[in-house]
Image 1 (spheres, helix red, strand yellow):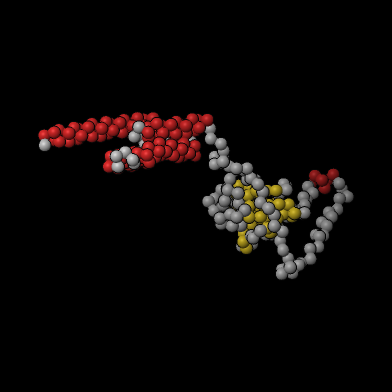
Image 2: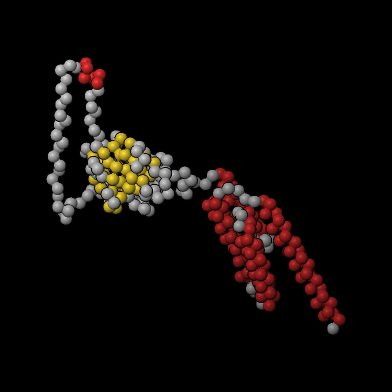
Length: 277
């Protein structure tokens, strides 16, 4: 038994299991966009084959009927995958050559043996096609379950410590900048200074009582943000950008210095104003 593709190419069926699909690892590769990577598989069933569809997007058709589960093939069936057709043909016996007839003068061509009787047809209502489990294929290259590389682990640790250390000194978000999320890092830094300003104001109003709650949050938030930066870097892979870290951290330091100087100038102005009154 063999398959004849619509472009005339024959494919003899000799293996017990034959895979069909768009991926190059298949025994029969169909290079068109309507075929899935692992589209279908042929399994040997006695003297013929059965075809199973692997939940492909566009389906597998035999004689323009979509295959559900498995389908036992016969000679003359036409398999269609996308725009590609594969016709099932029984292998013909090889005819004797002229040389063989010359060497055997008494040769008399014999009629081929009669074909075996067809199997008894069962009632469709009671016939149930066997269901074959799909074969287990190895994961493709770039599978998400592979462990992180040492380079990725090192970059994730750097992102964690950058976020914690700089966050404690008022520059939350530097670790996220290192992972490549510059916009998120700048937003985290701005929100962190808004929180610091509000907490200082409330602490002054409550005569330092609010600091009992503010100090644990001041330490916990950088640690939580650093763990998130490390997790993102482990999933993303690669290494961080030191140039972006230097730019954002440098601008952040200048803002911290400017804010501190402005605060002292404001306090000094209020003290001078209070003395003159």
